[in-house]
Length: 93
View 1 (tube, rainbow, N blue to C red):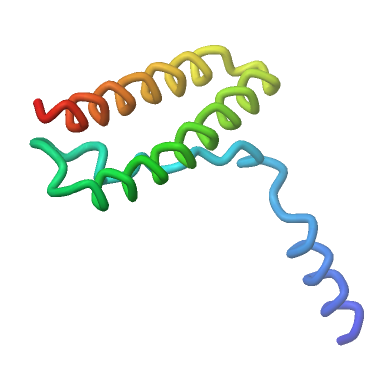
View 2 (view 1 turned 30 degrees about the vertical axis):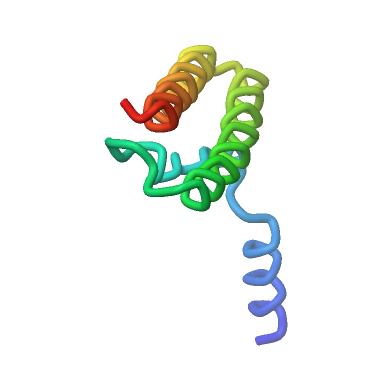
């Protein structure tokens, strides 16, 4: 029984070798339409965007290191699209 517990614990600790690159979710506040409701809402979304940008850049670098050029390009394009949508909202478009 003890051996079984050690084997299961080892599997759980090691985890799967795939999925090392974690793609963040785009902030929903950036994907909405219309102007921000106020400065506090804008500031909150801006902070979410800073975190998202950092996460997407790390994701793109990770998949690039794994030799997944197409996924890297797609991640960088998605980041640019989300940034553009956020900027449109910030301008009130």
